[in-house]
Length: 310
Image (cartoon, rainbow, N blue to C red; front, side):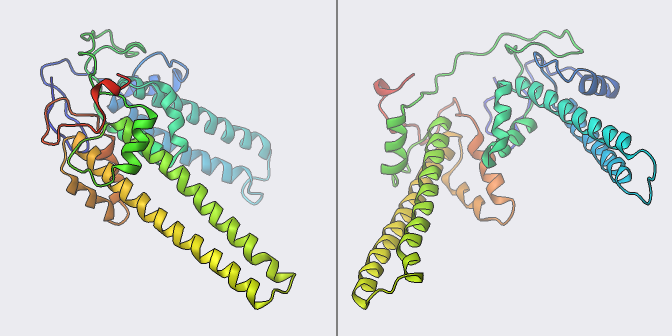
């Protein structure tokens, strides 16, 4: 099996069959005439060609829509032109949806992962998966639409441990400085999501408290003593919030370093995130990598084997 460390896009295992080569006409047929054939898979080449053609067709639909609603250019029956433009948009969306679901199947993920595109990191993860090569074994969601090529059964069952929620919370928030270890993808992303939810609630609570403390000044006159008490309370809360933000940063830093170790990378790759514009995306790609099955020099998890779910 191919266990070589890769950075952003995995290479194919030369010892296993590669995905079938589709012609451009087959790609168009698959994309636009089979939008609802979701129990199948599609190659990386087919998916990205369909993304390009969908983009071109969408641009043409924009032109049609502009023509339809411009009285100077189109004094005729604008409703029909508008309906044509909307129909094109809908069909392009359905074609793209079908291709995305089949592409997820092709890399070994359920089509339900499509819903992740409604979150920031989820969109990055979908982009990451769309760039990865086809898994070179059978998947439970069917075959390619234009090939009867057979594949071997899936590899050995994963031995990656799955920690409990309690273990994830302990690792994320209370093991901030234990960097000489590794952390599973599940642990990292669940811990990150919980941390972001807590910080969002904290920011909202800070704004709410500020409003509750300062709004009365606009309608009621307070004496200097009351103002000092309110000021002390507000400053205390701000100090607490800053301390919590620092703790959250250190917790995220430690978990990120351990996740990089688990993917076979040195923790120094964290500095990718400071590169403007693309740094966070590049770092996310490394954090999306699955656990490497071969040994790494940080080869230990922070929870005991007997306490794992699996």
